[in-house]
Image (cartoon, rainbow, N blue to C red):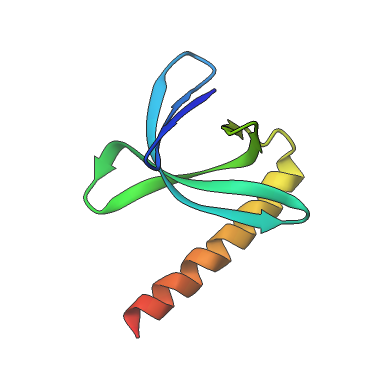
Length: 93
C-alpha cells in the first residue's frame, strides 16, 4: 500500500511499519514498470537505502508492490545498479 504526494511516498511494510520514501525514478524493464525509491525514513549522511518495487497506475492511482519473484528481483536490481552507477559516473565528469 502506498500514499503519494509530490514524489514523497509512504509505504507500509508487512508488519505495519511506515517507510517514508522519495520517488527517484520509474523505469521500464522486461515489459514492466518499476519504481526506484530512496528510503528517507532513516538518513545516514547522504546515503539512502534503495527500494525497488513494481509500479502500476490505474485510474490516476499509483500502486507500488513488492517484487515477489527472487529471480525477477535479482534481474531488476542488477539493471538498477547499472543505471545508478552510470549516473554516478556522469555526475563525476
